[in-house]
Image 1 (tube, each protein chain N blue to C red):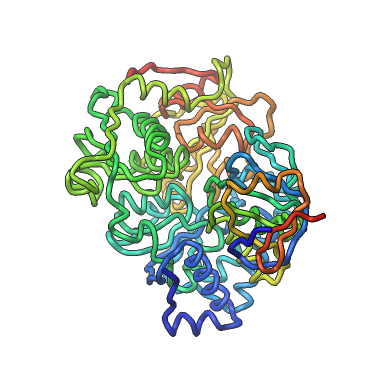
Image 2 (cartoon, rainbow over the protein chains, first blue to last red):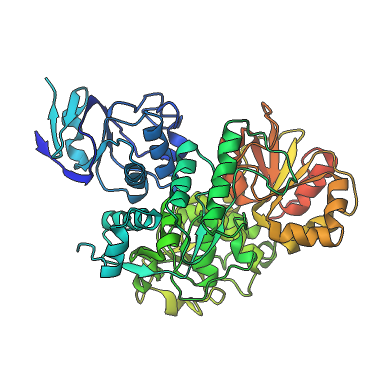
Length: 136
Length: 417
């Protein structure tokens, strides 16, 4: 169990961990309708982020990343939770605005990427207080 | 350091109306960015009215329902539709209707119907040193570098939230200490004839973006002001190959009367000496098509063409009929001028397809064509066209683009760096 800092509050989540091994650009990199990683150069190309606990080592800054994340929330295709090495204000704006719209959003928490490997291959729970644990 | 809001900002943020929603969005962003406070802004340029999905339309309509209005002058970047009816957009229902509703919502919020990515050539030119909140990477870099106004890259949602509140997080390029150059990008090793050519600026911009990334640099070795259209092309190319938000050119841009004034320290952290080989490689890197025998189209106007650029286009076409279309993207500020003197009719009679309010890489305009080849003089189109349109790109100067459109096959005038 690890207590992570809450970046944007939201619904507690549980899902299979998806640990990205390279930074990703949501705009052009993730299909907003299906949640599939569409960037052919990304090592996790073809994986679906919907319903997963998504571990992000970094993001590449398209200023429309927020629009893609909000569209995923609106389409019911958002990750179960987002775990970021560093806060990314542009990406997380998608969650902030979705909350303002009254839509149910996943939580976003901060965790050093050195700890990501602990969760790879496991079903991970992110509790309301930001505590990450491996589900039995 | 945590964010402190003024009593007035706190009162707005507590509201259940559109202004309250906007203030909370600005404040939450400021908190994530680590900004200590919000600062007043005097203008905004809004990139958020380009349709990416229904949620963006619903957000803009929620602001309208909440009675929100922009508090500062706000121009609009391109939308997904050509409201002037110059070109046919292949966006189908229901997306088409949602894109139109989105454009309408931003109009109701009080934004100017400028629909251009070159607002700085459509009369929106904030004063040097003023704080603004602009979106669209080329507009941001021009605003910071050429006008000397201060903005970060404001993305979807935050741009309109700043416009409504008249506030932005005090962070990044709003602060003078973050605007000074750390790197020198010296082009004095390039030939004067290359530097005087039209393609020098987009090619060097593309190289600059890749070499400099998101730090601040100053270009040295430029003897004369190359003109605003050249700086527009340089900035747009730099902002698409790297995360460049601000550049300086010694002796040209307003914050860099000379190198010493703009450098952050007594010496630069690094010197990049641009060689003719580097420029040639950068130029080659803008093309993705390998020696095609024919081309299917030419696209120009990213950023949107100025009236002067249309002038040059018309002189190069010289009344000839084009074998393949030239898509010429521009804003309605230029369209009006083209219509006044019959120029639009003459260009269209030659086979030029004028695209207004939008452009060929953000919405479907060009036919879907497997193996299609597009020629362009824009570093930004060269960067985005392969991914967004499926066309392979051939990069060339405008004169070569026009000759190729007349011939229907690539024509190159070789020019050594």
